[in-house]
Length: 83
Image (cartoon, rainbow, N blue to C red; front, top):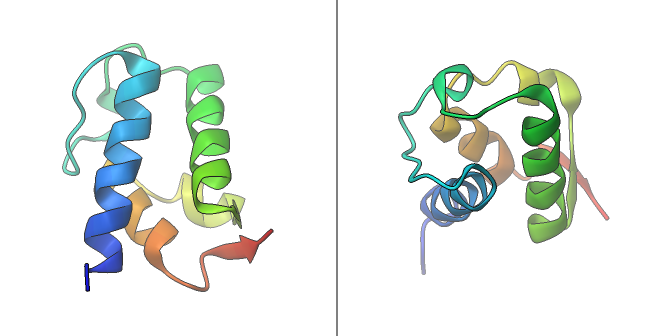
């Protein structure tokens, strides 16, 4: 059975890459990603929530510095409310 964090990590990287049109790795710092801006970041968060059918906690999300940290938040059962 796949590790939930690895599965979430791959999906989160893919969703970032789709929006930013550039490869994204787990250790990438979110604020340093090319073409990242608040509107794009919010679109990515919406895509993540839709993909995983969850509602993320804003405080936790904005505390994540890297894509990998965000993926860990997504993988945690307590990270958000399932919709």
